[in-house]
Amino acid sequence: MNMNEVIARINALAKKAKEGSLTPEELAERDKLRRIYIDSVKANLVGQLENTYILQPDGTKKKIEKKVEKN
Image 1 (spheres, rainbow, N blue to C red):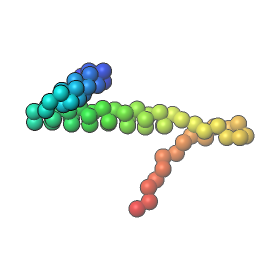
Image 2: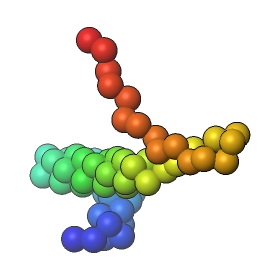
Image 3: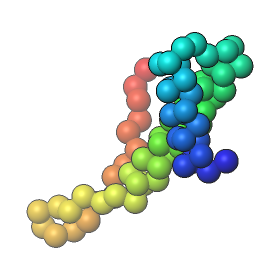
């Protein structure tokens, strides 16, 4: 299932939810499709950030480094 199909199905389920109620199977499907969509958006963002450089005032490029969280 490509992303356009996922989005179309999410929208169809959202429209149905506004018009009435969803069955438990449709609720589970909606949750699964939303998770697929969110994971896709996150992966695309990570991909963009991994290929992003900051142009320094002296003209050099610096690759963005992944931030390490402190616990």
